[in-house]
Length: 355
Ligand code: NAP
Ligand code: G4F
Image (tube, rainbow, N blue to C red; front, side, top):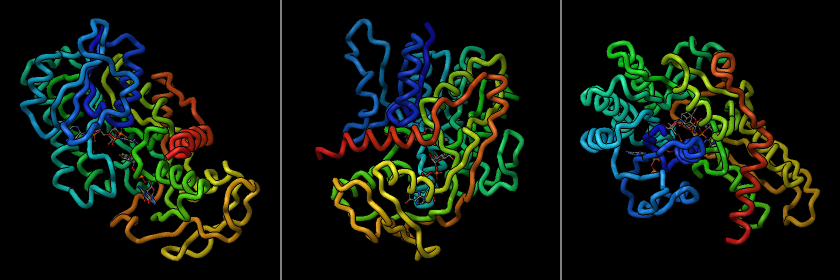
């Protein structure tokens, strides 16, 4: 039985990855930070009593800003694999708390690598680092692959760039099996509620349920390569099973705009929308609602743009070329964009209809 440590186990990816590894018969340890209210909802379905002898999932308090807890934990567990997923992962929020983001998203990775080195576990532990397509910023090259130069555009992306190169440096300097997964956006019903996909699926459900009139958004013209988190955690595992440590782009190879996402999401409820205006004056109105069950009026404004959701510097388009992973890891995403959006809407509908 292999043992894995997942930092960020309470997040979207951590929850899917823990479930995936438990199915592969791993013993799974997760680092969770202390919060004043429960932060383990995403893993409730796989959590069992720690005193149950068959239990293979254990949570430990710790924090990416606290070297001592990381060293102590890695020493105690001595895992075969570490998946470093913990991060302050919201790009827009990173402009408000850049120093904290550097501490967690950049130095946090250094702390993990140093813990492994100090404990002389370089030969035993493989490390996966949650790198990101945000590293590319407004890249000159579309699509982006492992050779595309990085041009980070936010404190989040700059911190992740530090982590990216620290992983490469420790691999080259100390021969640690350390890899970057450069993952493009991936979503799911467990996506955080302030990321644009989930913000939109929840708001549209609330609009058709008559609980909300419209949704306020930022840049509607940004494009992202959206995949399903379930497909992407499988790639993380495959990256650590490959014969040598390398860096990998994981993406679907298709990009859509925020407007595409809105149009598709409304169409799930048989509502047609139309966009009017530009920039901060852009909005979407209903042109047709084919389902009489919903109290939606023709010409109702359902989307408005607000400056507060614009970023000081935006990444306009991300589109990934994951040919390397498809060829060498035999990884291909199973989910199509439409299926992903439908799954998120259905899940939100079931959650919100009785609220
Ligand atoms: P997420 O849902 O925001 O989860 C982040 C996790 O990190 C949560 O468990 C969070 O704990 C934990 N965390 C934050 N600060 C911490 C700290 N100081 N100490 C310990 N734990 C801390 O993010 P995700 O979508 O699962 O993404 C996982 C990783 O992949 C992140 O590093 C993200 O930057 C990266 N990434 C994500 C995507 C994507 O599209 N999802 C794409 C590329 C890369 P709480 O639950 O207590 O908040
Ligand atoms: O959903 P988002 O906040 O995700 P973003 O910024 O692409 O970052 C996510 O993916 C990265 C991988 O590329 C991860 F590294 C990162 O951790 C995170 O998971 O925004 C997507 C796009 C942006 O262009 C944003 O400007 O949607 C645009 N947008 C427009 N209105 C909005 C909104 N984003 C948010 N969150 N909220 C809005 O109201």
